[in-house]
Amino acid sequence: MNHPLTFFDLWNPYLLVILILLGFIYFKTLNKYTKSYSNAFLTVKRRKVLFAIALVFYFIAEGSPLKAYGHYLFSFHMTSMAIVYLIVPPLILLSLPKPFFDPILKKHSVKKVFSFFTFPLVSVVLFNAVFSFYHVPAIFDYLMNNMLLMNVAFYVLLLLAFLFWWPLVTPLPELNEISNLKKLGYIFAAGVLLTPACALIIFAKDILYETYLNAPRVFSVFQLLDDQQAAGIIMKIIQEIVYGTALGIIFFQWAKKEKRQDESVTSEMKVYEQRMENVKLEGK
Image (cartoon, rainbow, N blue to C red; front, side, top):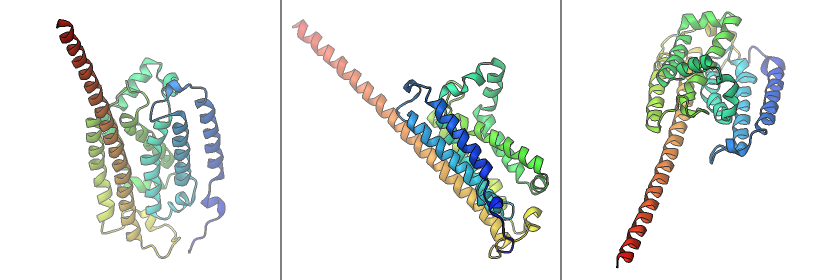
């Protein structure tokens, strides 16, 4: 290691305290809601577990050495981004019951704007377009050299990530929830839209980002071009794992729903046949 970092460079205890307080507030608030806000899959206990996992992932991405070394290694930076934008938002949305959003969406104007930005076509294109533009070398280097703009870009992308995941795991079914078939198409489209940015990074023959070209070397074993290619591969692999998991869950829920419907139809048919049999017996 050519550029040693201190403990406080590697770890962010302030973020840890904030996340612990946030978790405490969430658990206290969730306990106020009755079981009527649970369902067969998302019980109160499961919501708590999902929220806790989301906080752990967020801390790994933003408060651990992964974040610190992300200033020096592009592969670490992309891993952090993949966690924050592809893993944390769906876990958070799944952990939040409907009443959490009531104060926000009571105003018609707010609900109307929110409904527009969570409309599937808008949300999938907007997130992937901004994510791709973020990785245009000139834009990326400019943002990385301006702390304020970098933080603004981070939170804008985080907001867009939540909007992107909304149609798939919305806590409010009446607001832009889509059918299982459309969810499959949505995920497929998201994968296609993200591919060019990953491909640009993976197959580039030269170093794309001056930020990392001029950064101190923390691990001499990493070659810059190898690190850059690894960054694109890591992002694509995490995306495939997350989207593949989402597809599996959707297929499972779809099959389960179809099975319940088939059982309901079968039950109704049996009742009908029994009634017809009774009518025949009475006729005799």
